[in-house]
Length: 119
DNA sequence: AGTATGACGTTTT
DNA sequence: AAAAACGCCATAC
Image 1 (cartoon, rainbow, N blue to C red):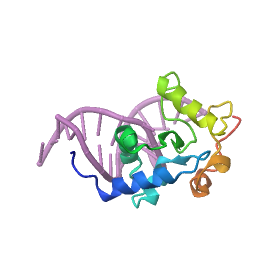
Image 2: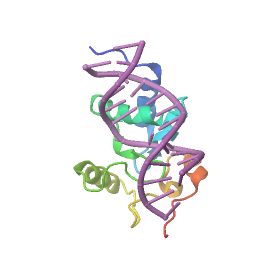
Image 3: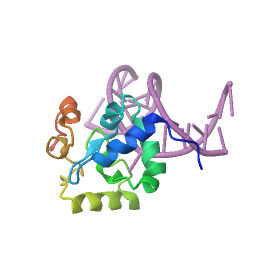
């Protein structure tokens, strides 16, 4: 047995599991919901190491810009994108998701406004 | 205890 | 606007 997970981590796990199908949340948003608004980085560790163990819908967690946080060519990027597309999440041509439309909790989208669709 | 890693976020160059 | 710097947090070793 590994070291018991901290409350924060368990909280994060339970929150991630609550993200509805077809919606996405950001790392910072989850961290905030778990009580540590600045632990976005910690979230990445959790998803990286515990997603299999706890069957987390890790694909529904993206960064604050509404984009997938992997390099475009990586297999993980393609996997995540296909999983999301399968849930009816749409990507615009900049490979970004509108947090206004698909964000689980709209507050995250608020802050920064919708990702610029054209530039 | 100090360093390294991880899928981040915000501010400053 | 793009890139770098900085800050932040949880684990592994």
